[in-house]
Every structure is written in C-alpha cells, then in structure tokens.
Length: 238
Image (cartoon, rainbow, N blue to C red; front, side):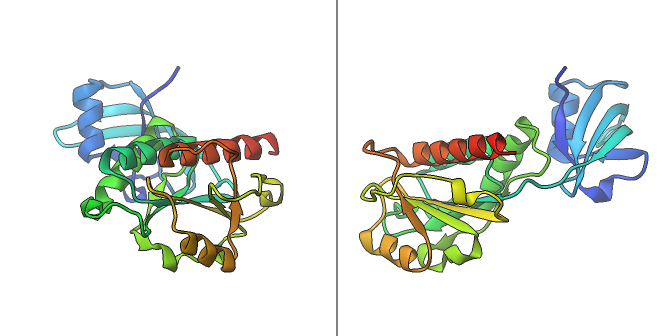
C-alpha cells in the first residue's frame, strides 16, 4: 500500500515524534483528511527515512508518532542537470519530470539563445516544484534547485564526467566511463539550441560533446531522454 510521503525538517523531529507543518499539514489535514492512526512516510532529507502514524491533528500542525526509521545513503554518481532556461510552462514541466527520473541537483542556465524575460521566474517557485515532485516520487533526498548562472560560469571539471548533447556532434552517447564517479554533469540547451562558440568553449574546458542520433529533440525531451538512459544504466550496473 502507498502512504502519503513528506519531507520534514530535522528540527521538527525527535526520537519518538515529528511535527508536520505548513502546506504539508494543510494537504494531509484538508485534502487527505487525516485522522489518528493513519500511516505516513517521510524523509528528513539528511540521511533517514521514517514510517509513522498520525498521533494528533491539531489546529496548525499534525503530530506524527514514529514507528521506525531507516538510514539511507545518497546514490552515486550524483546527477547534476544544468538546464538552459526554457519558457515558463516547459521549464516547470521539465523540472518536475527531471526530479522524478533522477536528477539530484538542477542548475538553471542562461545561454545566448535563452528567451529574454523568462529569468523573472523565481528560483523559489522552481524549488517548490522540485519538492513536490520529490515527494510524489518518494525520493530519499529532495532534488535541489540552485540559483541560475550564465553558461560561461560552468566548469565541467567540477564533475568526473560532463556530457553536452549537441546536434552537430558525431560522438554517440555512451556512459561506460561514467560509472564509479562521484558526480555526473549534464548540460541541455534552450529551445533555440547552443551557439557553436558556447559548445567549443565548454569542450575546451573538458565537456564531452555527444550526439543522440539524427533526430533533433525538443529541449525538455532531450533532458528526459538523457536522464532516463543514465538512470537505466546506473540501475543496470548496480
């Protein structure tokens, strides 16, 4: 059976109980109509996953009685998606699905062909979307959305392997040398693609420029495709 799943700040957790507050409290109380003894699961996003049951439904919080806890480690390599910023709806859908598929960190990127004006979307909203998607997919750790940066600030050597899909590359995608690394960086372009000089700059800095084949993918499709292949490969080699 699937139980409601949340992330709870460690400061609201002690040995026997946890407190559910804010939007999650409202969702469990008003939407799911929680009552005492209902079972829930949650993560502290710091290395433990819990099973609990509702002990009391109060005016501004729900008290959870902890039944069990389990230590959980982070999966390696850490998957870091550098995503050139897309239009509002496409970006939000991409963030949601990237969290569900397996991105651990998402870094929004400004490149030359990013549409002007879309940077007004706040990172706080993107993180909220990532949090909801992380709960939906019952991740042990929440996907982190970092503040945006410009493409020239990316350093591929911060990762053991850095992949950059580009339609003019003839190097077919492979992940064999990506296994056993601490982090794997991925950069996916905007709707209009990369400028050739951007690709060359990152290639000189250590990026592996790869091809998905002859079909040109939409930006959000490229991210989902790449993350899906990586997730399958990592699980297959676990």
